[in-house]
Image (cartoon, rainbow over all chains, first blue to last red; front, top):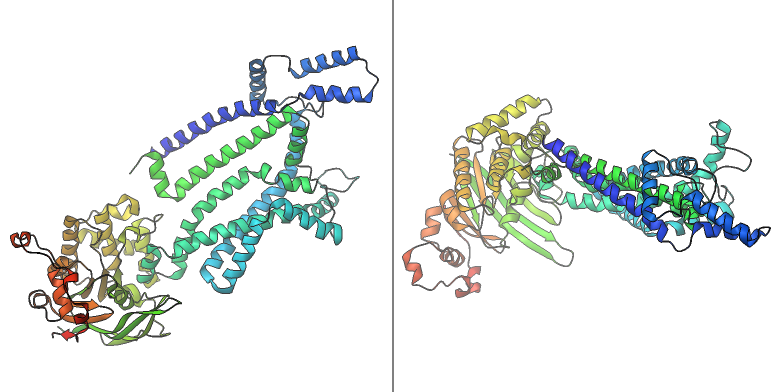
Length: 336
Length: 290
C-alpha cells in the first residue's frame, strides 16, 4: 500500500514535469533570433533566378507550409496534437525529410556509442574506486590521480588530443565519420568490421572520462563508509571481511546508482561534443546542425527526447533507490 | 570466583605523524568472574583507547606496542604484529559501541546483522537456528520479537542500544567491553539498559563486563569495582563503595568531588570542580586496593 502510494506520487510529479517541459521545448527554440523561412528564402535568393515577387510567394508558401503564419498558441496546440500521435513534423532545414526519419537515423549511432561507454565506464570506474579505497597504498594513489586527471580534462579537449595523436599523427584509426565512404549501414560483417574502426576513438574518449568520474566518486564514498560505526562494530563482532565489504558496497553504491541513471538520461547531450569532434552522425550532430538552421521541429523533437529520457531515468532511479535504501522509501511514502 | 580477564602491561600509542601520543601507558587490569569493572576518567584519559585494545579492535593510527590478554588461561599477545584470531572478537571478547545509533548499517535489517554475525563464527549454522537464538534472547529480555525485522532508522535510540546490546552478547562472549553505552540515552533509557546488562550478567550471557564511562553516578549503580584513569594510567582502583566513599589518590578525590548529587547541602556550598585542585598532585603514585 505504501509502495503504491509512493509510486503514484512519483508518477504524478513526472507527468506534471513532462507538460512543463513540453511547453518550454516549444517556446525556447522560437526565442532564438531569426526565422527559419528567412534563411531558406535567403538561400534561394542568393542562388539567383527568382525575382522579388516570386521570393515573396515562396516565403508565404513556406510560412503556410510550416504553419508559422498562425498565432503561437494555435501552433502549440497543433504541435501537441501531432506529438501525441507520434508525428514530429517535417524538418525545415532538410525539407522535405520528416523529423521522425532524421531522428530515427541518428539515434542508433548515439546509442551504439554511448550506452556501451556508460556501462563499461560505470562498472570499471566503480570497481576501481572501491578497490583503491580498500587496498590503499600505491594502487590507491595511482588510481586516484589517474581518475582525477581523466575526470577533470574537458571531454572535447581529450577527444581532440586523442584524434590528433591516434588518427592524424599515428594514422592507426580513421579520422572521423561512422563508416567508410561507399558503404551504407546494413547488418553485415563487412559493415560491422568497418564501422568498429570508426567506433573506437569516440568510444574511448567517452569511456576514460566516465571511468575517471565514477572512480573518484566511488573511492570517496567507500573511504567514508570504511570509517563508519557499523564497520567498526562488525569488526568488533568478528564478522568476516567479505561480508562487511558487501555492507560497505551497498551503502557506497547509492549515489553511484543515481549517477548511472542520470548518465543514461544524458546520453544524447553527454556525447554531443564528442560526436562533433569525430563527425559522428548521431543525435548530437543532428541537434547542433538543427540549432544552426533554426530547425524548430528537429530541435523540439530532440529536446523532447532528452526530456523524456531524463524523466524516465529519474523515475526509475527514484523507484530503485527506494528499494535499495529503506530510509528513502520511508521518507517518501511518509511511513515511519 | 576466579579471575576472568587479566590484561597486563598494555601500552597503546597513536602514531599521528608529527608526534606520537601515548594514550595508554603500561596499564594492567583484572576482571573477576561475574564482575563489572567500571573504567572512569576524564576525556583523553585513555579509557576508550584501553577499551578498544581489550576488545581487540585497535587499528591505525592506534598501535599497541605491548601487552597481553589472558582469558580463561588462554594468553593472547596484543603488541606489535601479533595475529589476533578473528573469531576471538565477538565470541571471547565482544564490544558494545559508543555510538550505537549508527552501529547497524542503515540498509540492513536487524536480522541481517544477526545472521551475518552468527555465520561468521559458525559456517554450518542455519539461518533458522541463528534467528531462533536471537528470538529467544530478545523474548527473554522482554523486547518485542518484531525488532528483528526493523531497519535501524525504525528503532528509537533506547531500543537501538538495547538491540545492539543483545547482538553483542549473542555468542556468549566471556567479556563484554561496553564503551559509554548510556551516554546518548535519557535517564529512563539508561536505567532500563543498565538493568538489562545486569540481568544478562546474571543469566551468564557474558561472564564479565568492562564499563567505560565518564558518568560517575551511572558507575556507582552498575560497577562492582572502579578503576580511575588519568593521562594514560590507572591512578586508583578498588571496590566501588571504597572508591566513592574514601578515595585515596588526589585525582580520584578531585573526580569524585566533581559529582553533583541533588542534595540540599549543594545549594549552599561552592563547587570547586577540577580547577580547585593542584594538577601536579595528580602525578602521585597509583593506589591499588585489592
